[in-house]
Amino acid sequence: MSHRELWVAFVTIVTKEIRRFTRIWAQTLLPPAITMTLYFIIFGNLIGSRIGEMGGFNYMEFIVPGLIMMSVITNSYGNVVSSFFSTKYQHSIEELLVSPTPNWIILSGYVLGGVARGLAVGFVVTLLSLFFTKLQVHSVGVTVATVVMTSVLFALGGFINAIYANSFDDISIIPTFILTPLTYLGGVFYSIQLLPEFWQSVSHLNPVLYMVNTFRFGILGVSDINVGFAFGVIILFTVALFSFALRLLNTGKGIRQ
Amino acid sequence: MATALSIKDLSKVYGNDFEALKGVSFDVQQGDFFALLGPNGAGKSTTLGIVSSLINKTSGSVEIFGFDLEKDKAAAKRSLGVVPQEFNFNMFEKVGDILRTQAGYYGIPAGIAKQRSEYYLKKLGLWDKRNDSARMLSGGMKRRLMIARALVHEPKLLILDEPTAGVDIELRRSMWAFLQEINKAGTTIILTTHYLEEAESLCRNIAIIDHGSIIHNTSMKSLLQQMNTETFIFDVQPAQTADIVFEGYTAHLEDPNTLVVDVEKNKGINELFIQLEAKQIKVTSMRNKSNRLEELFVAMVEKNLGNKEV
Image (cartoon, rainbow over all chains, first blue to last red):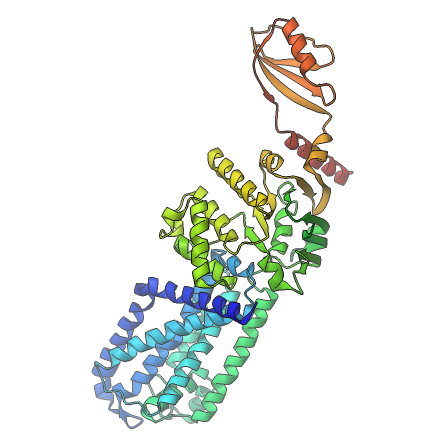
């Protein structure tokens, strides 16, 4: 395929993905907005006012970056895992497999679709957070780079999950038993400085910690970890997951007999 | 004339060690209307699945218009359109979107995709449904949608895997007319079907696959010439009370008004009519006992089964 044709195929996949999650906005965009508003009210306002400061900021200011990142992570992942698995389940993946669209375009298209939903939800949650606190942005570059890269990484994770999934149960196992615990223990609600030394070391094994803290650095200018190192971790995971997902597509794992 | 599809020594062993294809080879020439027939589980869908890149082959090669499906994947795939047996579109997408999206996967710009979608949706009687969700369509409409989708990138080779399964006779015939029209316009067509009448009336060449091997690959005409006898059924008046003897023919009464006669290929039925006339038996209507291809097909598959069992 020529570059122009590849571009058309890529845009087609991305457009289809965006059309899908906007068509079912009541299932994709509305729930995280409601959930995060509840988090802002309960943890930020009601409980947060009794907690006091965290990392030099009031509790509401501290948790807003983490909650935005949490919604980006879960929605980027959720979009790709549910969309690609449905495509497999309905056999409409065959539309792509018979076409000349190369696998790296298929993967990139689905990932960008996931990123689009992650960022859309992140934007909605950010707007909602403005009703509860003032948002300063310490570094626009770090903030944007972190949110985009994190979104790409978790969209790739969702894609791999969808490839291995054989049933709808399989697409909820990873989010429930791995993604949610990692996110909650990734410093969304607390600074790891509060933990004993041993659990601080254990927390450093959690990749979500790096993303949440880098994003928090972008907004508040404070972080529990080194931002440069965090970017390195995100890039490393992204390259590894992209290569792995592409390899799965090339071998036809879960999509070709 | 170019070869539209060339399959050589294609084999497929599934994960459960089931050998679905055992060195299948055949060619389909450009412009042909080709039937690939076989009983259930014979290997038709596996063969077409490999050609469509939906199934990984174990060994062998596939070329589409001279492009190797492994080495020149994009060029080979661009020449091919596939209408699968099962509905495989997103049921929640709009009919028009399904076609435009499929065109996009082939790198066709949005403007051209829109024009072609309109053309094929109108051609297949789905234009009024373009804004409807695909799940709202009837079974026949869904089949037509899959044909329109397979044609939107204007392939030179079209594969139809049982396209008229579950379709009523009127719609089936209109689909036949459409397929003949695009075949005449230059599209090579490969058809699998369980309606052997369909294969007989549409296809010029035929391959029969059974137990993963091609057991016959010839023209429809020469295949049908292999039949030695043909059975005709006559509705007759007045009612007959005992079997009648016709010189040179084998006949029996199915009921007092239904006469069944086996006619040898080189014998013809003119003589039979003369004898009927002489016996003052009036023929009110006549028909073949069953489809000719069906009789041959059953005989061949049974023979192949017999050989396997020995």
